[in-house]
Image 1 (cartoon, rainbow, N blue to C red):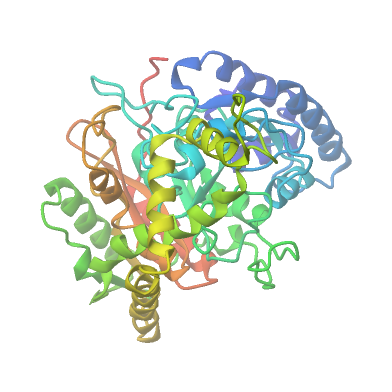
Image 2 (spheres, protein in one colour):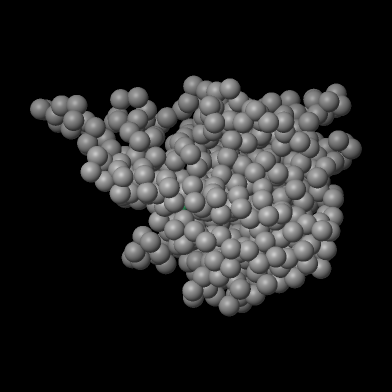
Length: 492
Ligand code: GLN
């Protein structure tokens, strides 16, 4: 019998349709793997009963012969997605006990397609972080290990860890500044952030609404194509959701990239970037060239302002979005003392419920939006954002089809390594990814090599807006050329 944990989404779909395996069998096997993987702390809420019910319903649909591609596929769902009647805490203490009355559009679409929810996945609190260490549940752990335990990245660290450790066939992630792509790169998995507006944000706990996008995290590019298609589509409940047809992304995977123009942006050569990242980038460039693409040097001159602009805009939006957590409507409320009024209730609840990084962002965001500093910070950051977008527009208008960069400036680092570091050290993780969110573009991380310690390294491809099919196809060609097959040795 095939090892069920080694299947991909595509493989499981085909095997279920042939009758070689049922969704119930698959689901049972994954639930068992999750039980044995407590050390990874990837799954933070377990939903085995829901999973088995969904799996049985999926098996009936598959038998009836009308099953969509994602039917019967066991998934993990990031804790940022509201799932009806199931704890949805955004890894925050302030949402303790919150069980939504409604289902997010993304999970609704996945469940309508017959997918199975195994449970909710760990993440950084309110998706703020790059290491999963700001989670109220404690950090998830990377299944890849050298000596010390490593971060799976963040904020979608639980999603990345679960997919890399074969605890599910795919997982939902969200990406505001890199939270799908950086954890994918740190765990040897694939993750795509689609064009802003492609996937509905309805029912996804908001971090920075003009940047947030959900996307799939999977074992390979084909699986990302299949799962992304099921997540996409116009949603009248999200005013920023685009009414644009969703193509068959899997059908775009021909592997033929002859004549495609791939841009290599000179500004992404950062000072002090490790030799092995430079080498990976060069190797990736050569692979695309060998596959028939034309390589072109390009310039994205405002790149160096992206991180500072992001760390003004994202906290500004977050401070506004998080104002709703006041102890009245959701989750946690502090115990009050005699004489406390409503102000004390807000203050105590928010001081207890939010972790340190979230409090930092709320304070920075409130400051940059305050009357005296609005123009100096927030408005200036918005102008910079427009210039960053213009850089990309110009490059695409000149005929470039996709842009190749490293996904992260390093491989996964040790848990705790940044404990005493300046927060900016942690923010630097996003140096290659935030530009893509600021410009609203699609970006994908693909595992492309190993570092000197045998840890995975990822490359990022950035595509034209709404051209996820093309982007996935270039990623597919890169994946085939890179031939990344390494898996972490099981220690958990
Ligand atoms: N690491 C970035 C941050 O902390 C990005 C997070 C994300 O994409 N959700 O803001």
